[in-house]
Image (cartoon, rainbow, N blue to C red; front, side, top):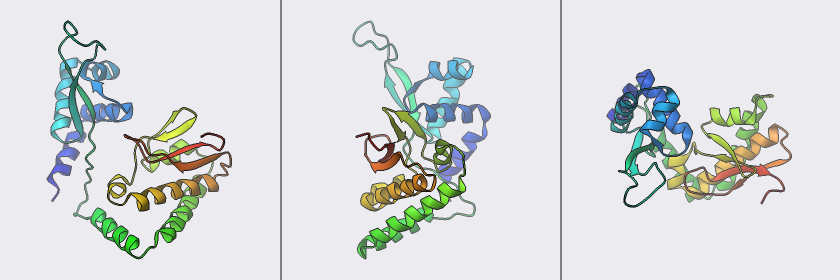
Length: 215
């Protein structure tokens, strides 16, 4: 039994903790106790209590930093800053281990050189997702798949990779699958002026969506 995931589920059962977790996760950056309290209309001590409970549950990570923007003597004591934990947690009752199955299958596919078949299948699945999405906004479809899209520099950046653990173990296979899936979605929606391409960077998905004339 995955006790860590159960603890995380219990932590999120509290509505205040769930709101705080969603706020920190959506920020895409480190959040202070005071900033979270002000954003959600909570007392600072209450926000601090629940943020620390989320850290204990493995849902958030904490670091020390200056919120004043100043350094050196007189800049004040470092404050606790919170960000979403990189660790993945999932809860399945009864227990299932789909991640183990995905790693075994990915390894087998790489051994037999079947990457192109995987990419073709991913693109076809993307077409299905894009076609079933109808006229709904592209960002909405991507959010449902866990990408967390965010506009920046004329591109649509994806703050989360739905295949993160697989991409760490099998980067060429998983990242190629990812890009082809997105290309299929864009193709089905008739988004001829946009493209999905590989552009890895720390803290986000390896793929970005940009205009065809964007470098």
